[in-house]
Image (cartoon, rainbow, N blue to C red; front, side, top):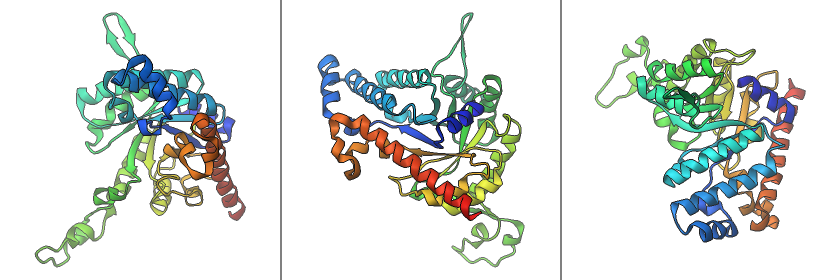
Length: 332
């Protein structure tokens, strides 16, 4: 599936992914009213509103983009009807020839991890049948439990030709509480330490995100496509200097880059997430696109034409990212 992602990026000339992360507060009143008229103010009504909202946006942008990234929590909050809307969204996007990245952030071990991998990337045995539960092409995975949590996903990736994006350095402000902590090396142990002194933990060594990146690079070599691995990484747009380091650490991994736009990431800061071939990264925008009509720049579209506003935001984002990449090429 990494080859399909690369082909879609080349075809669209758009190294971006649209995050389908719907909240009811994003969904125009007319869609909510229609859904509630049919299903009432129920979980079913909310899920129907989400589905109709997603469908309109996908119809408006699918020809411009290579991939979408539905965040499963936004669907799970509406219970079983919400998960049904998630599945309908995945299937519809695949009908439109889009690569689907399931933003599920799973992380466990053994049979539990294997069950998560089967649910989102693989198949499950039901009697004599092998059935596909959700059917995404990629899934996001938390590496905190180590290889025990990643290996079941790697096994499914090899079998199904699917992929994963492993959390390495996330875009949220408090990510550094753990991800930036340096792992002490033997030299640090020689430092004098007084009560309450944390130098033994902070001096020397490498930050945790870089150690995780090295492990991702190792896993990547065991699960290669033609030029890039089925094993990618999540590195936030809000930490470009760290992204530059991690690009070197993980040369064969695609980087999924959240945090563009609404969270403060700027295109000019993201060029080093890409390799010299112009590939190697895909930049996500969620509410900056799906709720574009709420922004001053696109307010003229109004709630009635929210999908057209989303299309305009996609066009602007593609132009912004490609302009930054062109400028880098001119400087190199």
